[in-house]
Length: 89
Image (cartoon, rainbow, N blue to C red):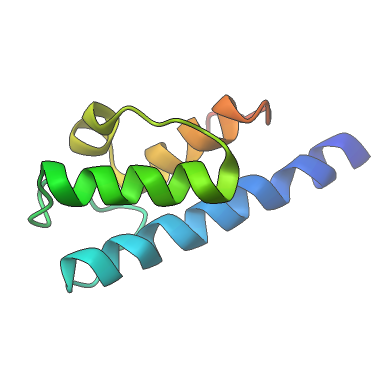
């Protein structure tokens, strides 16, 4: 259980930071349930968000994921890319 507890902060941090960054970039409130594209995101802003994710977490997220998934799913992808086990549920 300590391994899951140790890994959980990465997912929690991603689930907190990614919507906050999206809110800042889009000037629209964003939650983990929101889709970046549906909120008005476009390729230039997606590249900026992807760069922030890479700088903070060391994970390279394809911008296509930002257009196809909600922000919570993007956070899960970041956790997966950093080697954090993510349970579906």
